[in-house]
Amino acid sequence: MTSIKEQAAISRLLSFLQDWDNAGKVARSHILDNFIENNQGKTASELEQEFSLGASLFLVRLTTWLRLTYMTGSSLEKVLKSIGIFLTSVNSNRYLIEFLEVGGALTLLETLGMETIKEEDKKESIKLLQVIANSGRKYKELICESYGVRSIAEFLAKSKSEETQEEVQVLLDSLVHGNPKYQNQVYKGLITLLPSVSPKAQQLALQTLRSAQSIIGVTHPSIVDCVLNVLRSMHLEVQYEAIELIKDLVNYDVCEALLIGLVDLLTPPIPETSELQPKTLSSDPTALQLTSPHQRAAHLPAFLQQAAAAKAIGVLARGNTSLAEEMLRLRVVHSLMAAMGNVDHSNSQRQASLTLEYLVRIFPVVEEHVQKCMGAELYKLFRSNAEDLHMKIDSVQVDILATNKVNVARGAWGARGPGARVQPAPDSGWPPASRTVPARPGLQQQELLLLPSGSGAAA
Image (cartoon, rainbow, N blue to C red; front, side, top):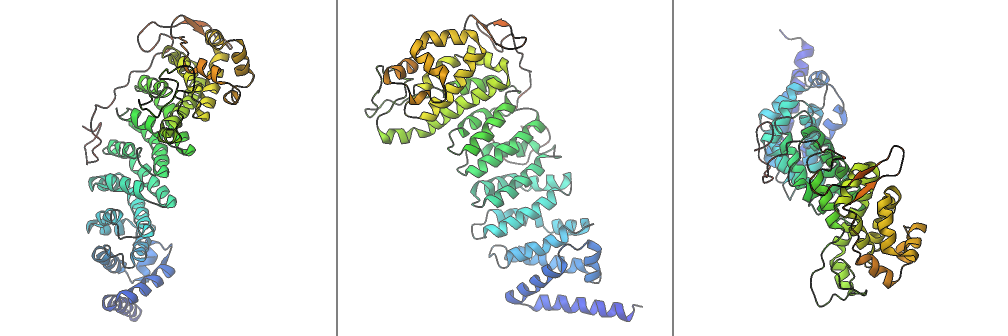
């Protein structure tokens, strides 16, 4: 027989549940306020004590109400916070299983795509999904099998709150760790975020891709174009993260494609149009001078990409002399000088000049070719202050840079410094003899379909 004390506790529980069942929206909202205030941070055993070993009876009511009302958004944030009290309590595995058995994870994912639901409510859904993902590998797989990667990635791209987007990044990072069966799916989902119109989404996707790439170990064929296109962003924090990812990617089988792409970006093509008028003495297509403000605005993304590419090349060259030598074979000196002649974008001139100045200091053969092409006066200006060169040159000197024919791709080059020695430049083939790019099998060309897939490289 139960004691009088136990009977009183059971009576209080039944009375509480009856009050909930009979309450309307306003009354239930007040009940939730009291529950959140009085039970935040409690352990599972404390919750059971509070509900006379019947806490699951209230959790199932919360879950049922969530599934019935989430489309209307009625007290949704309070319901999600109340469920979170159960799921985050110590020794809460029982509550987690009960929540998932009635489709709780799928409901949370569905809220992310609802236009009628407020951003704050969706943030609470993301937090609960984090709790689920952090509970173990099988729970991460459950989220992915529910088309979770697609829903989460789309929400990150559309979210207007940077704080919410950062919570989404935490969730995606959790899904890519300790999830071998679906880690490729998450990896491809991050790549699809790179063309996003949200700078914050691009920044967070690039950050997460760095850790994901080290876990996956192989590259997807589309990652090169996607990362290079991100360099068109006018947001410096996005460009920074893209360059950091490029520094990692040159250690994989896409190194050649990345270097070729970066060098090509230094000389973007100008479309043929009557509005374009050459400012210099030549109409060489690499000159990149436009007179129309409308045309300058239209081609700003290409110029931003050009400047970022020049900066990235400088970062790679400073970090690895072998990469610098490989880019010499790709005629990077010619392309950098052409970019220095782009008077319509001063940052392109500045970044290209700084990178070229480094190559001139390191490689005697580059110094020789550049000095011969520039002439004494322009070369003196260049070496005295490469960063401000674009503010001191005249139209004739701009034309010298924009129409240069420098070719340091053949012959011999050597790097100045301790232990440096002259190495012959390869006539053909990749990689040059001075550096061997590790052979790594890449994923096969495929569309980025974010559908549940099996283990290993997604087919």
